[in-house]
Length: 198
Image (cartoon, rainbow, N blue to C red):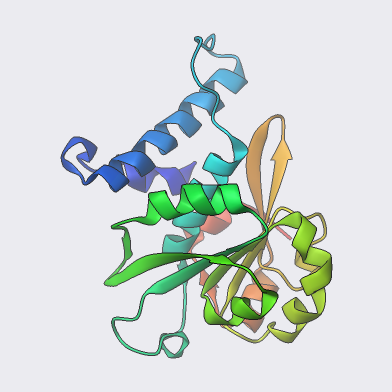
């Protein structure tokens, strides 16, 4: 929940449309969590999809993980987020990251059509159907500063860094600090507080 607070600590009514989109999805996620807790009855409203929740988490992962400077070609190079085998998530994420920055770097979202494109990104979500075919590539990239995220069971054992999993109808995170360290990536304390550390 701490990861989501940064989206709420700004005047979103005066923000660009894309930022209002992120804020709206974040609010829907928060409301969904409250409704799932049973504290209030859910009105007849649109249910937040898991893809929308994951898009918000991916956006915040880009902010709560630190990459080494040598991971970028230039000082103003974008932080590239790739999505493999999850076109709906890519569509939502592309809208969410529009006009968003990490520090001075803009965020760029790409739909990856080939596993070989993973090496061109800084953060990659690998859909569960693609994990087994790209497992050798994940192992080969274990020392590269590429944050690898998936919803596949056992992803962290393959060398991945963050795994989404569901519990009681909510999307949660597992994080592998040792894998992050091997890839020269540093997770913030905020991320480690809200994630299950494996």
